[in-house]
Length: 70
View 1 (spheres, helix red, strand yellow):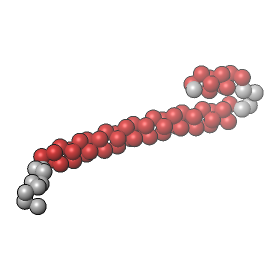
View 2 (spheres, one colour):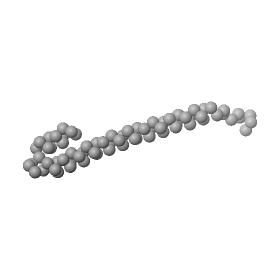
View 3 (cartoon, rainbow, N blue to C red):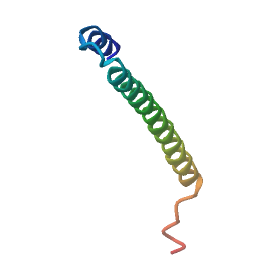
View 4 (cartoon, rainbow, N blue to C red):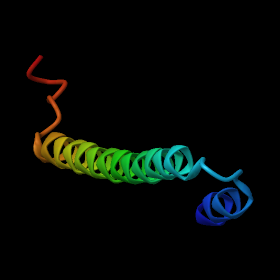
């Protein structure tokens, strides 16, 4: 993506530096946001997985009901 912005800046018409700079800033910010979103989703998935594993372990520790006592 950085190469695209660099090429855009090189081939932009004279006087459009400010617009290209804004576009580059938007692209950079969007990429950072996507990375943050990915990391957050990964962390949430890890927490959910740990919660499921903990619930399974807790359930496995509960003795099964005895058919004779029911």
